[in-house]
Structures are given as structure tokens and as C-alpha cells.
Amino acid sequence: MESHKNIIFIGPMGAGKTTIGRQLAKKINRDFYDSDCEIEKKTGADIPWIFEIEGEQGFRKRETDMLAELLNLTDIVLSTGGGVVLNVTNRNLFNNSNSFVIYLKSSPEKLFRRTQADKRRPLLQTEDRLQTIKDILADREPLYLETADTIINTDKLSVNQIVKEALQRIKIDENN
Image (tube, rainbow, N blue to C red; front, side):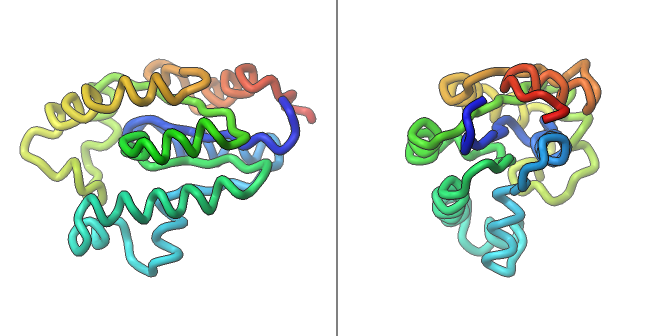
């Protein structure tokens, strides 16, 4: 993999972007960033509060600004929020940056199980969480596919297996 190429994880809530990103960064000795965590650090407010006060539109503006800032860095591993692909500006930022984008794909049922007890995800605070996940995936799946350089299905793989798969896809030797 060429030098200065960032590795970006996209996918729905609960797909494992932060967990996998953090492990991969550690393995290849790169800095790891989570765009949602960076937004929280910069604003001093958590994501649910931003959604409550500014709405999804206000949050998405902050997300785009943070993404542009993070993509100015080099040799990083970046985990993004599940809705980052909704904004065409964000998709263009990915395509025009020196980045390799990995879509971590999961079934609605697996995402439901992984997020079942999570109270911090504003879009999932509904009566029928599984249906909400299915609806979100229906909207976002084409955008994930359009944006990704490669796809890894996380349903049946362990964290270590997903990291190994990602390393193969980006052609980085673990011992590098």
C-alpha cells in the first residue's frame, strides 16, 4: 500500500468500525481517529446532545467539517459515523483524498443484536429497532457500496479475523 494513504472504515452503527479500526491501527502502528469522538472532543458535547439541540442536519454539518479536517492528516486509520455517506460532500472527500475505504457490512439482525442495549445512538431510539435498522440500511447500502474500495462482511468473523482480512485487502504486512 502506498505511503500516506489513510484507511477509512464506513458502515452502519454496530458494524464494528471503531473496534476494528482501533485494532488495525495498533497492528500497523498508525494513529487511530473516530470521527464521532473527535466531534465530541471539539464541541465538548456528546452526539445525542448535538442531535437534540441541533438536529441531524446540525450534526451532519459538524461531521463534514470534522471529516475534512481529519482527511488532511496522513497515514491514519479513521472510523466514521454510520451516516457519513449520506452527504455527497463526504463521499467526494473520500474519493478525492488519499484514502482506502473499507465498508464493514453486517446483516440487520446482527446489527440489532450488537446495538440492542445501546441508549446512545439517537437514530435507534425507536419502538421497532430492527425495522429502523432495516430502513437505515435500505437508504445507505447503495452509498456504502458506491463509496467503498472493498467490502468485508463482519457477520461471521471475529475481530481478529476481520483485522486479518482488512490487512490482506490493503496489502499491509502485519510485521511491517
